[in-house]
Image (cartoon, rainbow, N blue to C red; front, side, top):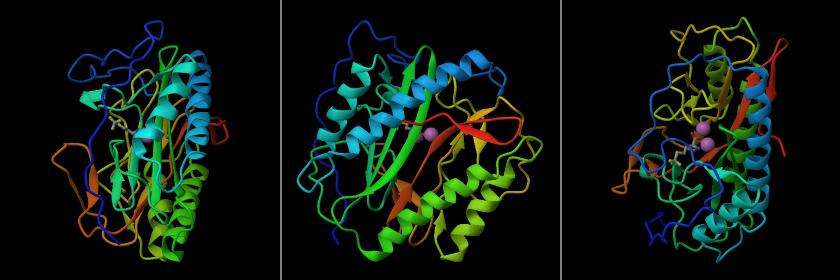
Length: 282
Ligand code: MF3
Ligand code: CO
Ligand code: CO
């Protein structure tokens, strides 16, 4: 299995002028968020709308995964879908990110930049899409096989989805946020999988990354108590080998140090009175 290498990146895709941009576009980075982690019902309803477009965009983009298709072509499909639905692709221009979505293949953990690399049969492809609409973001990610996957990769993918779902089911008001990483890492440990620590879930709403952190590994010192109205992502990245990572010279692409494969699933959710509701639903 050959290692993923960087390929040329196409020019920035234009976004129609009528589509509202997040505040960070055209600036080096976002303004820090100092508001509450708890969102109003109005903000949450807007997040359902942004989240729906983000979820539908993944489904539409994933239909195009096939050997020979480049990740830049996937970016084009997603970009057009998102703009056609009146939303802005949140990644584009976020801290200088040059494309509309993240496409992370095989040993790339996350933040892969769509480029001219043609997908190969057997590739494990993560598509991470965030949409901004009506002042709020919805952020989700899913993993797919390009053609048939080897058994280890297929198992990793299915179990990473299950790990995310267990993390989501653990969310309840009154519990500490550390319960999420505890259930995810306990499940991953059954299979000897690595749990990526350098990248985390996060508060998301009017801010893309609010500063509120959701760990996927077991860290009991995180004592923040979950409250109804909190909105954040759960987005475990599990690896077939070691969890440690490094970043390419492009300052974005995150790769496992041992080049073991990684799978990821992500949803944006809101804490409810009885548990949680997923806001990134098609
Ligand atoms: N969507 C990613 C996340 O899950 C963030 C991508 S930031 C980008 O948090 F700049 F790389 F697009
Ligand atoms: Co996220
Ligand atoms: Co994401």
